[in-house]
Length: 347
Image 1 (cartoon, one colour):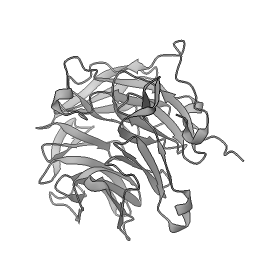
Image 2: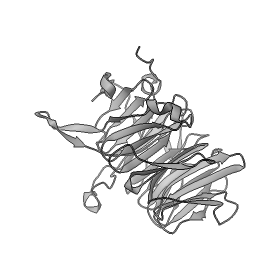
Image 3: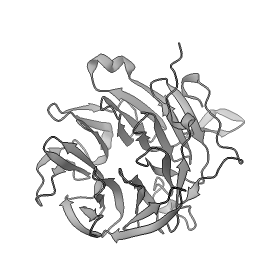
Image 4: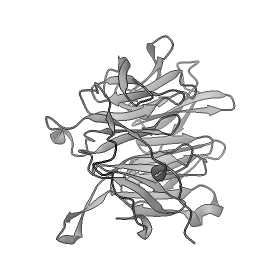
């Protein structure tokens, strides 16, 4: 299906350069991938309690760099803006920080229940780590103390969050979305009818995209003057068979990630596909179909030229769906202009 009737670019042909597989991935489901914002270092979190880091060469080849462990599955990752620290959080209710200089890690934050999402941002007073948990709280940490510098009660369990200072958005259970503009926090109900799965702020910090388990994405602007620009669209859906066009199989949107320079974004689906989109022109730029398993996470490198994505079990079918031999890999894709650059708006 194309975006608002515009023709989608075809998936890569067999003659195109193949994506490069990251060597020595974790041996259990990958939960998150995150590139360092200052160097070509890729971090990978997994349900086997590990966080692994890989150096990437200019040719796209990878080699293991470092590894450390939590006491439970790791659910999220983020980097400090200068790339000196990697943060990780998970089911053990702890946030750990890995210092790239000393190669040591230590606990820096905690919640009463598993921590599902973390993000680092720079405020006028310095760097702050935000952590969202199933204990229905959002906490802020400056790493100078073992106590948070602030806490926000959430209406439900935190499932995802993102920051583009001064905008912070949190997606929770029961479709709540908490919008924090620092000085004027607010909340809303998701414009989508089903559970929120992914959320990502626009790089310009004037809105966000939210994805649901029902194969839909909503584009939401913050300012009242921009509400006419809000819209939603279907994605990551397939006809159940070529002969039954009226019967559609719907897949979750597992991850949304914006290109830091061009403002286009990708959606990663349980259907095993990745699509890139231009929200301003309402065009799907390209789709990569059937990559062998659910796409659980994605990240652009610091120059925006390499795209990392993880193919792994997304736990959408619970424990019974984790069968032996399920694909669990990370790939690196060299970005092309037609995948990441905006298109002129149709007149």
